[in-house]
Length: 93
Image 1 (tube, rainbow, N blue to C red):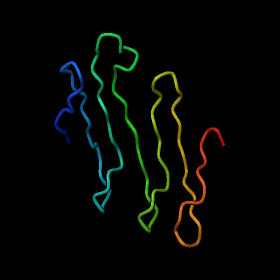
Image 2: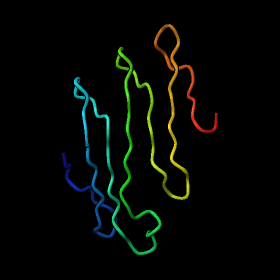
Image 3: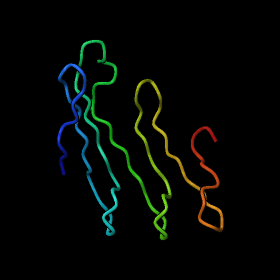
Image 4: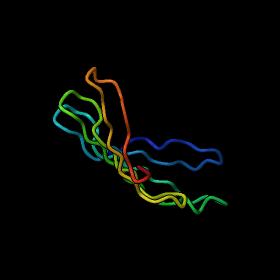
C-alpha cells in the first residue's frame, strides 16, 4: 500500500508505506524509503517498523529498525489501571 512521495529540500523525496493493518484498520507495519542524496548516503535505504496493540487499543509494543548508527530496538509500553502510560521498556531497560 503505497503513499505519495514526501518532498525534501533539493527535490528528492522519501516514500512512506503502510505495509499491513490489523482487523481494526490500525497500521501494524510501516516502511520508509530514503533516497540517496549528496552528503546523506549514510541514511539511504529502506526502514521497516512494526507496532502491536492491546485489546483496549493502546500501543503494546513497537519495533524500530537500525538506522544512523543506532541498533534496532523493540520497546514494550506499560499502563496503569486508568490506562495512562506508566513505563517503557526496551534494550536500555
